[in-house]
Length: 207
Image (cartoon, rainbow, N blue to C red):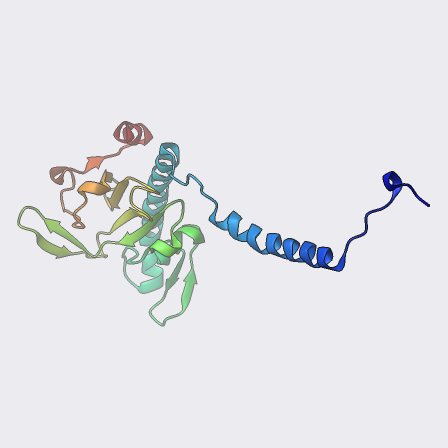
């Protein structure tokens, strides 16, 4: 007869059921806990500044693409014009409605036209009107000679602290989200926007 010290403990039916229930509970609760675990998801200042730098780089790509689009537009439309939609710098549409693949900007930038499709924390809108301040008289953009695009943070204060705008002059302007009025002035500098001729100017503004 084996001594108590060498006997093997046997699992009772109730013990087996308890173990299975415990394993099932852990298997169910673990994924939920992982998804809802407390985290510090506050974006770092470095992340915001990197997004802002990339937004400016994207705007520079749009500037270059608009110049090429203007040169190509006569053969596509019969007259010279700038792209009325950022998306058309990637794939335009001729007068018959046929798509014309241009690839002047990458697809991820071409489709970043709303908060759900932002790239690098920013999305890009085609500005249809510019205003004269302080009268706020609006002037509709004439794409035969001008264009304006703005870069907006996907989440203000979380993906970027600055709003940017650029036009056919190739000058990029910025202002803090907190002071943005949703009006795009004809003279940005007179309305408190800061011109950014290079990355160094943006770095100074970010400080």
